[in-house]
Amino acid sequence: MTQSVSPNAHIDESAPVDADTFARDTAAIAASVSQVIDGKPAAVRAALVCLLAEGHLLIEDVPGVGKTMLARALAASVDATVRRIQFTPDLLPGDVTGVSVYNPVDRVFEFKPGAIFAHLVIADEINRSSPKTQSALLEAMEERQVTVDGTSRPLPDPFLVVATQNPLEMEGTYALPEAQRDRFMMRISMGYPDAGAEALMLRQRDAVNPLDALRPVIDATRVRALIAWARGVHLSPAVEEYAVGLARATRSHPDLRLGASPRATLQLVRAAKVWAALDGREFVIPDDVAVLLEPVFAHRVIAARSSASRGRSAPEAIAAVLQSIAGSVRVPLATR
Image (cartoon, rainbow, N blue to C red; front, side, top):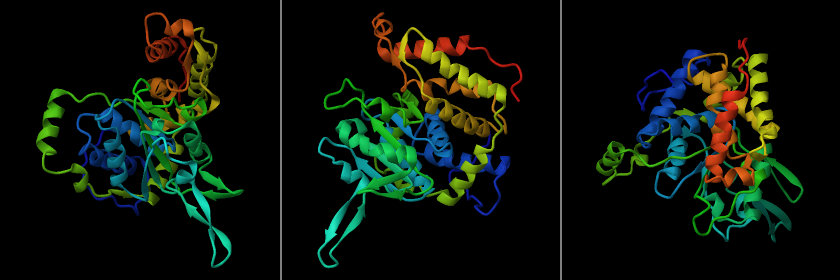
């Protein structure tokens, strides 16, 4: 993003969305989140891309590096309903989706909505709950509705799940099923802060929580308008062909035993449209697609056993394969 905006900048939510207002509004959101997330512009941008591309974000890293803080900062910057779900081994699917409770006075069953009924849902440590509970999110994340006792209920619009998870090697974690991982548009890692950012954190957060100072800079209605504008960013047939070529290459690569799904291809181009818009363009170029290849595809594909056994971990093997695919798939000549 090219605009520099004060984190307390006022957004004129009545103004129609165009390239200039899109840049100003998104810069204001990023500036607000960055007050809390020091020195992690890539993570802030990934969260913004998922919000505006109608995807969901999975943040995977060790405890204490700011995963939940990023999700809470984004939630605090948007004037919308927010719910946080702490995933634990004893969490039940009904705690997420809601349950029907019998009302003895009226002699009817009444639906009590679960925590999933919010614009922004923070699923904290999602891989500490059982696969059965994790599966309660599948319909919500894909179809943006919840079905309980045969009745489907729509979720708020916009709807975003920001989930955090600890590495699988840590005690008490469950691997997310393939179908669950495929619902997330992007997976990112926060990483440790550099020395300067960590020292600044010690000074600023010793007495106060920076989240307490955050105020919403945009509301849900304006977010919907930004989503609609980004959806209209031009995607040429040549760039479509490039995105499809990347996805198909993962399905035939000898070092992968599971390639990217068609859903992954769709989410790759949706994310690329927002990425282009954040760079001030109303059209997608191949570089937009290529830069998003790893965060959009890496958590969806599975390395072949032979690839992961060559002295590399499975994530390292997958990253190497995706880098080789990005360098080998032909970039189309006519991209606009």
